[in-house]
Amino acid sequence: MRSMLSSWDDTDVSKASPEEQTRLLAAVKDATERAAAAQQEANRLVSEASGLRRQAVQDAMDAGIPRDDIAAAAGVQRIRLYQILKG
Image (cartoon, rainbow, N blue to C red; front, side, top):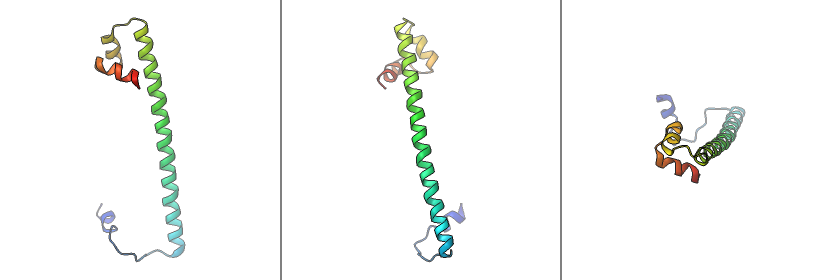
């Protein structure tokens, strides 16, 4: 951690050759793009899973299963069921 903190200074003096700078900056850009793509995929998966959960809760309610039982199966308080249904 100390070495990371020591690199956070205000100097603009590069210790890397121009080629090394190009390589390192390309690595930063690539890692940033990969992180953004992974975040988008994670958001898509969460949205999909939330939709499946919402439908399962709705189906259980439509079947007349007691709300307390549905909440217990979902691992939430009963009031949360209505928040799940709203999305």
